[in-house]
Picture (cartoon, helix red, strand yellow):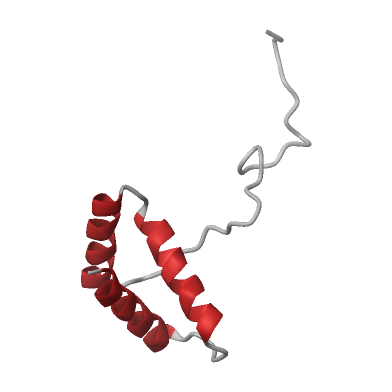
Length: 83
């Protein structure tokens, strides 16, 4: 091990950037998030994966932009379909 290291050319963040995914912050209604977490526990997959699939399914069938109200409606519809 060296006595000192030069970090002047270094940068913060992940060492290997993730390809095809972007980290975002999103606010979802508590009941919607809880329902996706319950479904994820039942299916053995991640709740974020289920939310991503629900959004993909909607985008595949719709040409309209997704706003906050539409997003809530989509998630609730997908939760009903999973039951």
